[in-house]
Length: 432
Image (cartoon, rainbow, N blue to C red; front, side, top):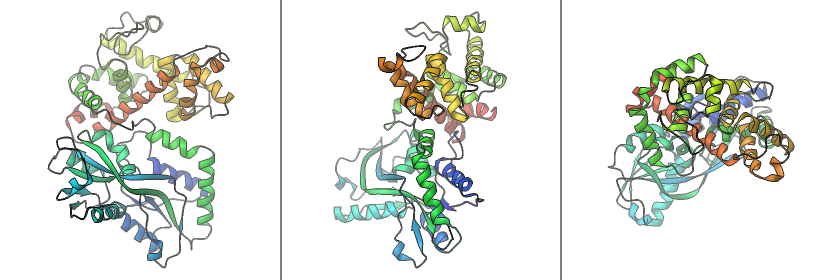
């Protein structure tokens, strides 16, 4: 298989697994009963050339739409599983795009992506002017955009939205100002001369689009990323990581080790609960870094919810307790941790109720995607009247879990990327 070195295919930032596209590929090889040799290429054109020359049987065309008439090699188009527009970004220290004619006489960065270059060429012809294109050396969006995030000399950047999505939270100075051109398509291209391959691919895509696998993976990797990034929220998170997290880092690492929890996940829960404020208090009476109720604190044997060490150890112990209580519920992997977080927020009984409602409404009871749909139903009498524990603030549970997923994802990325935050987060990442 030939693919391009994008975050979606070969992720550096994601803690969720091998990557959205890569997990699809791995799942397909299991379905097809074959081994996998996947190679990354710097550009789509080179990956497509490998397919044409027989160096690959399949190409992962992430936003790349080649002209099949340009080659005599018999190729087959797979189904489109995503469509993504070209997005124009602007640096926040420069004016946003008010009219397309402002692109004239501007330097515009574009990754080495034939689809983007084609869209920009069509746009330039409509403008009847000649913007100066600064093309990247490859199709990768991450490294060049991180560089231009800190460099306001270039006002505009034309990128592919699908490739932008997983890196957008780390580009706090680059914002979408417009969209251009036809949507770029995500699909697989296969060689027709590999016996049985085309039919196997077609059968596989029919299976995963009908059984929910594709939607589950999309939720797993992207379902928590806001459509519009609140950059003040990200700025506040980064500031708190530098100024407050060091005060509690040793307790987080020790508690995470004792209760077998990812330290970054524990830190993300703490940030969602209290923004690292040991005196935090909510209107419902929960207190401290982990926002424990008085009853839960007594159950855990804590003498003070406001003591940072006790709060962190108590919160970690309670998370592990809830995770253990999901034994026998057929919930595995990351889904089980997301169910655990929902239970931390709304109570274990309401999670059990949501699982029952998922079954009642013919949804898979063991995926977060299903629970995300079901939890809000527990605000409606029609549904919560059928449950053991009754009404709960289901929308709040969904927002709570997805916020933690978002903070955890950002922390994981900041631990890896160059920057001040890495010094504070890397010890937690290394303690996993």
